[in-house]
Image (cartoon, rainbow, N blue to C red; front, side):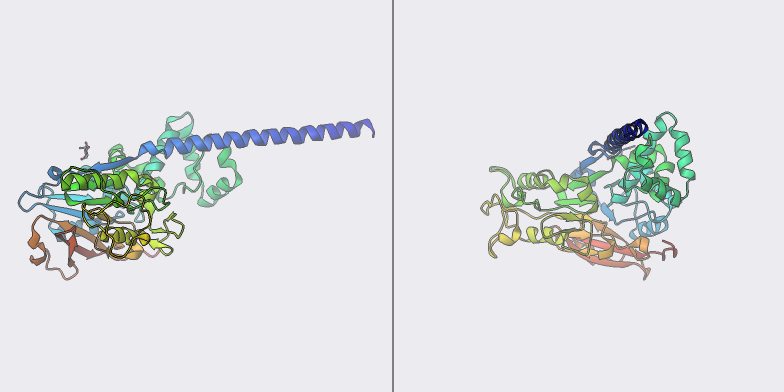
Length: 416
Ligand SMILES: *[C@@H]1O[C@H](CO)[C@@H](O)[C@H](O)[C@H]1NC(C)=O
């Protein structure tokens, strides 16, 4: 072997080795960056998990007082105005609540108007999956803008075409850059621009929206996608299978059990699940797909239908309702979940679950649920003479009634 050959071989080994070390190092760096950007922009402590509404908050004992719960608005501000009008909403007299997804799918200006409305009146509500995407983008944007060179870099990136962005993400350049666009996030698309353009007041309002609302006096929960009555991974018995504690009043027992549903079932503490769940797969996994497995609302209703009051004996470790004998009851009292998110299933009213997303943004309907302490509500004359307004009287809770009002929404423009 001649000496130039040896040199060539040694140097090629050296090049390969250096290259490998460099790749490993860059990969490590990128994964560290990706991790840090994930944890700082989508961390669990950016969520308010729960807000409890007291009897005084609702004040349903006041004359003519109503609680109005709105389905997914998605920036459809004209329809929002219309339904508030159809229900005769009065800011001073009524308590308004939304089920999340107040923005997205109808453009940036509409989203900002929707945020203006909800934030200026500080309307109570929960965080939807689309709201969450906007909020997470805003955390990310604020972080980039706060670091040196961030503003310039962001402006450069925003000038890129969608095709260029796609290429940039695919090439791996994203992972080597100082600022990493998290995997699966859509840069410079609708959620991004809502996040960039919303005011600090919008953001403050948005980021304070809890993942779940609990209304003990109505034995009702509100969450954007839904909640589960049992740990579907089956690692713990359901809180509905055991009497909470001994000597307590019925109301205290119910409160304790409802709180256990929120705190002891791991899926109900998981932000993604509470904002995205549609069904439960055979093995117990939660999915956002609506056309596979079993809708979570069916599982909720199956369990609640089995509640037989607190004198029934404990079945401590029960996780699967199908293991329960036909005549056997559970030591619990039922509670209701009001939610949105599932537009493809349309208005979905079951005994213990109320799905209010009737697909306004897709040109279908916007729905509001009205709760009063007046038990005669279902006999009352309609709120509006308009034939476009539909009304329906439903059961709410064990003895209550509620009213559903819906209006038709405009057809979406062809491209959306
Ligand atoms: C909005 O309402 C929430 C909850 O009721 C409250 O904690 C918050 O202080 C209010 N914000 C403003 C700006 O009034």
